[in-house]
Length: 312
Image 1: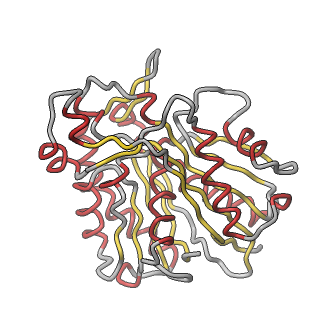
Image 2 (image 1 turned 180 degrees about the vertical axis):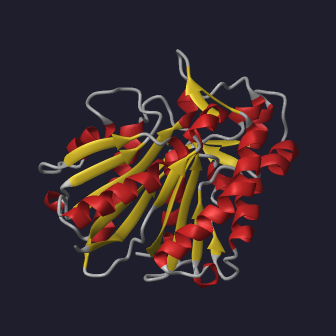
């Protein structure tokens, strides 16, 4: 069976920026409180006319242009999202229509914050099985639409945006085996429930789980790919909270890796956070073609998923 590789990446964020000082005029908080607890400085917030699918399409268009793959060769579109408003047409179908793709399979994947790594693994599996040769894999969220802007414990966290990757068949294995799973009995710790749907979480529960349980799982991801943590060039964790990212990255043992800290400028963009942060690292040249990079996401459903890829 062939392997697969990430050929190119791209990202999109809405132009509207919400600062900590802006939030201080909306709820009882301030810049120092937010930075000390979550490390976030700013976040991008979509306007009324900016939708999950429009942001996904813009990120995908950038990745597609960078890849050089003709649009008619894309035969699979996967969109990881938990904030799409409409059920049908799904977000992936709308992206395919916007990009004028020929006849791809189109699927949305909802694993909340772990959605992109799950979608990337699904594309890798489809390519290895011969069901697809070229795929668009996208994480896109309008998290601001499911946020209670009167709740200072959650509204300071969220941002909107999208990141995308073009994945193609490869003679070499450049996307390593996925390690994925969940803790079903703790799914209540991160929720988007109700009518209208609203984001809520048990912050301390998530923090303890992430900082104590996830480093060992992330090291297992490296083992499956035959990569020692010290040989990683980059680590892209779900951009949930700087106070989670930094200790988890340290405990993984990747002493030579660039660690993505896009949460500082983008906030928590759920399924968009990993591809968004990866695309920025590539754009800035902080990681280069062929570098081994750990992608590892975690969160809603208390799910997790990760793989080591070779940088496009």
